Length: 170
Image (cartoon, rainbow, N blue to C red; front, side):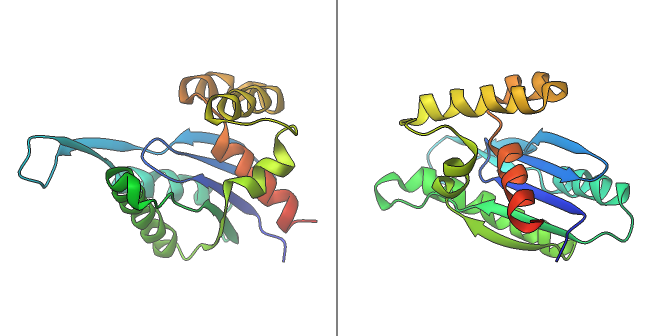
């Protein structure tokens, strides 16, 4: 099936969303806000701004009225040795799923290695090198989005969307 709008979602509160359609290629950071944690210890947590993400997705869907959309979502990191990071990733993941289900957007999960194997050069290892390669390739692929890509620090959501578009619309 050919989808008119493809979303690539780099999961998490520091994540991003790439959008590919016949009309547009867009990229934006996942909207977030900070609030006091729900634990007894004085601390803050970052959460996805659900209402803002709904508005972004509504605007995107409005560009192609009656379109069929599909999303590839990077699988959240879950590691018992990194409990707080895992809890944050799972909170973000649930927010994204609720937004997609609200708009009746189908989705599938992918591991980072899947899209990186196709979109990044061979031999890149380690988070700093992966982020730099993502940044460089994102800017080279979509120079009109270089400001937002540079500010985000990578183009993961965009590269996921481009990978999904190639995979779904062969």
